Length: 414
Figure (cartoon, rainbow, N blue to C red):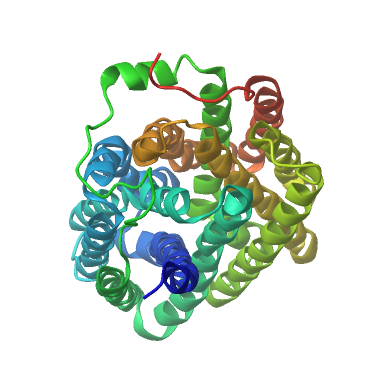
């Protein structure tokens, strides 16, 4: 078999890998959305207050936050094939268990297990993109892959709404868990770690050191990327945890109506994110690839996402859904561009999984607070207004910091 023939076969294979990563993100966020749409029903069953709902919504982040870095260090050493299958298998098993619980304590334990499984998810995706995507296409590929999150939120929300309506929330959790187990088997059978790339993680490697992590935080470019990741993650988890309840609060609609409206927002946002990302990348890179220039895409998208601060001025369905959809589309495009910016700027591509883990550990500390703090805001003020204003201000600040800080390659060797 000639090298040319092998090359022709490798091209479609990588698109299969990208598609599976897309599905992994969709399943991950579908499983997260399962709780947000089930929360009103669960709240009544377990007699939960808004503050308690906030704590329940954040519970999977407790272990997710702690294991982001350790799990991605193992990912860099073992490879994406084994870790991807194991991660999705564990969190899907947690979903199955979640459908069998009899009290809120048992449910919280299953959410902690869910976080254990989901910890390396985005490290797996970043590793696959770094190993298989060409530098010119990384931003577009990453944005398309991350729209899997929106598809998962849409599909998980609408499927969950109907499953809850007809069969109960326990059936919702068990059905989604079965989908994830099927994906884990498919990934193990299909994916292969690259054999012919200089920076591929084929053999066990030396894990990232404390000194290298410390050097990351001495890089202004890394700090600029990290600020954006933290800010967008806060809003992402706020919307993911509270949007169904927000729509019920503002529009006074039932579970099925909430599911349909939420799913519509996510679907429109996914389509919008791809369009926004491709248009902005074409404009920024029309004269050639210069990775730091991707920060202009990030900053523009963050400013678009800051329109979330307009929500308190609307109280009917159409304008609320338009603002939510537009802000989420910009947020997703910013996330894709910022993640691609990280993969471009880190010089040691063999440790991109661990570097992603470092960013997620920091950003998920804010993600952990988001549903909890929002629960207190709603409890104290009786509305979501302050939560939206805070997010809008933070996104504008993050856009400015990205523009001013992300300029030089990120080195970990001092």
